[in-house]
Length: 282
Image 1 (tube, one colour):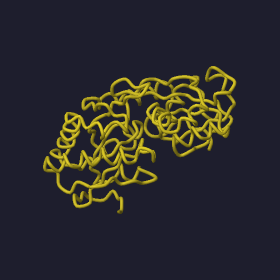
Image 2 (tube, rainbow, N blue to C red):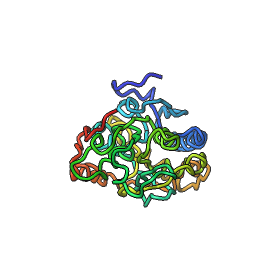
Image 3 (cartoon, one colour):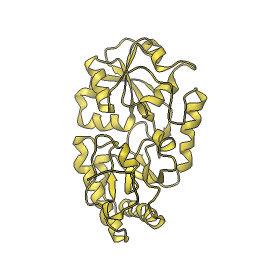
Image 4 (tube, rainbow, N blue to C red):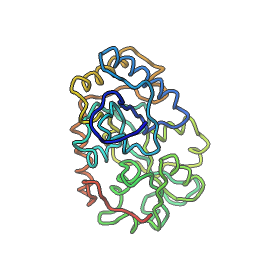
């Protein structure tokens, strides 16, 4: 299936839930989408995709005008995706560190590492999942001393490609510290406990809006309302099989304005909130 940003074509609509879709919960994520798809069809939405689109890089999917539903990161949501997607809602997760539709990052280090504060990791090696990740990069930038950048504070910054990869690098001693989404941490604690047990939490990042569910800005208003209604239907039906694996316990539909806090916090610490930032070296 091609993924493009061309005109709206309801015959090839896309659904993608990539942010926490580790292999161990892929079947649970599929069950979640199957439940939503059935309820969307029941609400009259046409050409609902039967299967999720799974891609290595979700950015083209987020920008596709035929996107029916996806989950994205809060930082792209307020920068590169602004005016390109419409907000559906924000999942609330049953994970330590989450409060309602908010989550935080854990700064994690090897359990045997010397140091009890971020300052004691000055000059060491950091692993970052992506430059445009709120939980993995921007939170780390927020927590640096004012005026300092990743490349000043750390001796090196490696782009790992995923939170799980950052965790693996710290576990193996390839990196010394990483900022990890608390939902990812909870999922890996459930499914890969040996890796998590090799690490410890050094500090907690600020409580921020969790990862939003979005649809293309071209999605008809009636379909946007159907998306919200189908999610409410699924929650009301107590479809535990659809939610347990993903740790979703509820969805907030009135948290869109909260995402402005992300750019405000980044501006306060001198990080560009328009899509750039204080970057370290690769």
